[in-house]
Length: 186
Image (cartoon, rainbow, N blue to C red; front, side, top):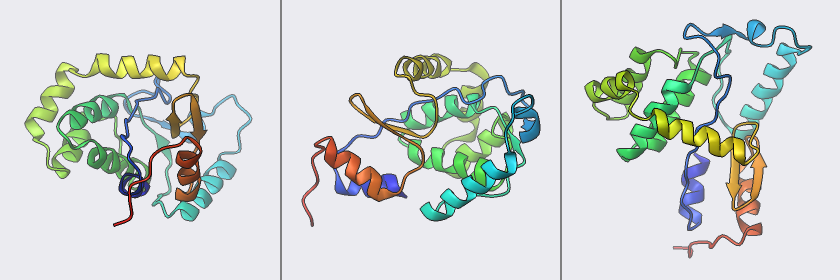
């Protein structure tokens, strides 16, 4: 994973920030056709380009037919981060959504994902039912809006940003250009 490689090579702290990606999507999700209804969008072309970029970056990507609401996944991710399992949980959600096409808006699916990365399933369910991390996600959404972020992923250092899934080399140059200290070779 590129994040692990960046951490290995640079003195950085990575902070995940939740972003409101299609926040009005109902729990049962929307087909991609429904999501883009009324817009002149070539879904096949978009998915083909996404698949090409994923292949170039070595990222797994399934044949996604629907989009799901990620709000609860973001809230549970904040909890996972508080338990020291943020990266693992984010990766599990990515795989579940983008590779397996699972509905990450469902509590039961999220509880299984939490358990799969070693988090207590009962506590995960309680966090989701009580919406313990609602305010943390609201704060992230406000921050993303204030920063002018309009797409994910977006990588930010101070006021500089790179938008989109980029190869390691691009992120490496971004860190160098922003004078991020490199760790000594071991």
